Length: 177
Image 1 (cartoon, rainbow, N blue to C red):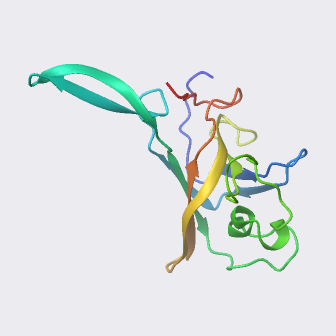
Image 2 (tube, rainbow, N blue to C red):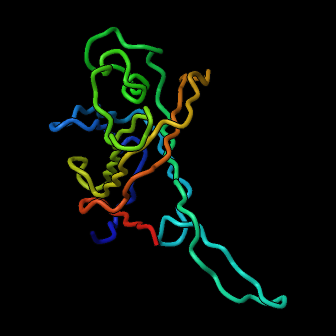
């Protein structure tokens, strides 16, 4: 994707949560989110260690896998849904309420930890469609702040990205080294 000459601005992003069923259950949030993606280093999903020999740099190597995070802040619209669709983003991430029958995107080796896929789409040209898209697979809810009182009140959720970030439709491509 070519670099866009228009600046991607606030209120032109959408965040979509997706579960792991054959035809995924989705929840799309628009115009009420702030997204922060953090923890990527270089072009790989591995930490980098530097080794010295006799006081001088000897080599740099990729080491253990790192798990970047995505934090999403939402306008507060209540702690729980009313039982009908759409439910709240927190209910989706916790597989509760309206989304209690959702399926995790990972099913092997997680010992009960459930994951979702998250897509962030940014728009800046014609305000229809997406100019930039980031896809993160197998995201696990790491922590959340249920209430940050203010004008307006918000809540936030932080996910660890444990799966791929190199989907063919995504603008990011990070792999394990």
